[in-house]
Image (cartoon, rainbow, N blue to C red; front, side, top):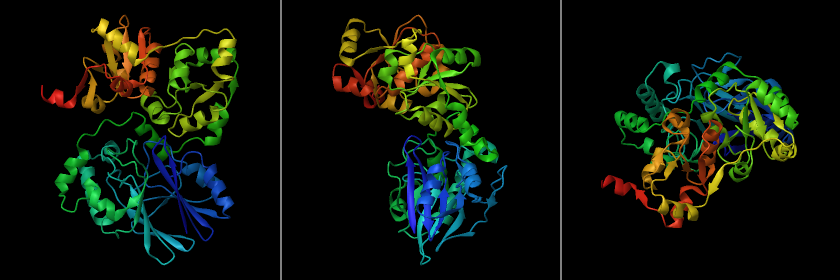
Length: 471
């Protein structure tokens, strides 16, 4: 028997490949399915099952393409109602896989159809629990994402989750390994661990939601407390996972079109496409196509695309370092952005060589910014981190304008004023600055290195949480 966790850091997502005696199962596959197929071929195995723990909100699963290409049925837990052919398993149903077996455990709460898959080895001993978004390492799935679909409140769903954990998961042996669908960085939970697997017995001791003496009321209160609004693209991904989507092969074919600077410019003007520049912040700031926005591929790319581009059908044109275009198209498709229509051949260098207009965003290092603040204490500073980060510590007199809410809060800013923006390390502030620049804010300056470098500089008045609480 073989168990392999295939973890994707950008999405903080874990897919799983299980194999026994020439048969394989894939749990919660990513959109691009060829790696699973090739893995099975190398091992001389046949993919027998495509197992889905629930209708995912944060990414588009590869279940449809994987099933179509292998003939393996898609399996959901009880109450799932997909718009395509699937095997809707009964609670407790056994799925055979080579010399092993997998038991379906219906665990509603995160969503109504949420299910875990309990793997038994050749000796019929339970060895692993693929817990989806029901149980994370250090946390449990948030119960507010399925409220509308379930016609239930988050408190009612949290109550179902409490019952599921107590009746289906916690009675299992302590030596079972828990393999969740997500880890730290995912918006599907509040406070997940950076670890991507753990013994169930350890989780019973350390996971706040599995406390043995916890009442149902306590669980509901703690699990629903402090939930931030989910990213806007979540319901759209649920719809795609439930109703179906275009093959990834067609998405790649449409998007992987190299365009000359003239053709790129014409496409941008005629289609209304967003120009998405995915280079790193420093290179972007030095020269970019006017009105393009920067979301760096080497950061938490896909979630920020989902948070900041509201329409998943929005046409997108790509600018990146030559050779990375396919990766960009793939990672956009993972979160349902299937309408990439081409990329700039040769990258920004070809645009410059064609004597096309470019724009730039000014950067300032902490040392120079300290001198500026000393001369001009009324300088407008925008801290684009989230409220929790801001409340822990921030520059005195800085305004908190989280990147997540840039569209809602943009009206509070004045295009005639000069703003200095920073985040924690520089990634989010350049995204923020690029969006403002594309909306006509011409006086936005990025503070290099973010809050981390400002703290290290030692010349700034940092307001801490303790100071705020003290009044």
